[in-house]
Image (cartoon, rainbow, N blue to C red; front, side, top):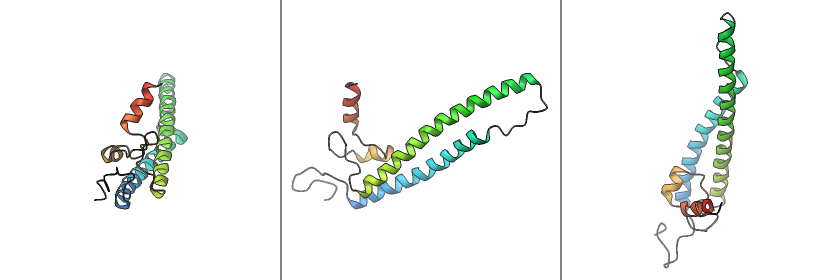
Length: 135
């Protein structure tokens, strides 16, 4: 009955078992995100591993342009990945505090389906749409 309502009152938080399920999802995503972040950081710090010293100067200029663009893109992707990691870590804190899955605007439970897809979500879809309309 934990998944339903108690005494006809709406459920206000997820059970410890449900929180454990979400924790496992988040830990798995976090591990993958950290690996991807490290790969992106390596791209930024190590530059191109292709040695083009003995090729024509024109090719070298074109290659350097492509390298700087990919470093810039890698930098932007790394920033986004870092923010994603922070959001996942914040979700783990909410699990520990047993506040995970509660919409910060409406106070309602965020549906499990949404949390399985976006485990760091802090808003229901409805709350997010309301906030976007008010912008």
